[in-house]
Image 1: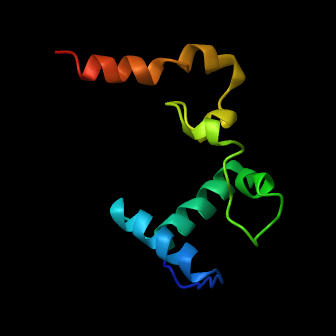
Image 2 (image 1 turned 60 degrees about the horizontal axis):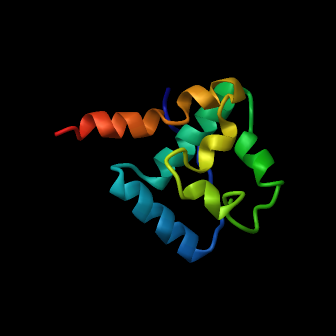
Length: 102
């Protein structure tokens, strides 16, 4: 599908610079990140991220608590299937241990 539509977004310079640096470090771009976000939102027929931000475009999304970012499950743990949380709780630790066995 040809890319012939333009989307312009206003944001503060610091957010733009930090986002560009983040995506560049991962071999991507802000434009690609926005395309992927929109495609995934359409695929899921959902705007969960926007719902979590409570409709505020004035500030970037923040994790619900700092504690969520301090462990291997990460800040996205709140989106996990509750039925699988116990099963997945230590999966990352087991994978790291297996990878680095000496």
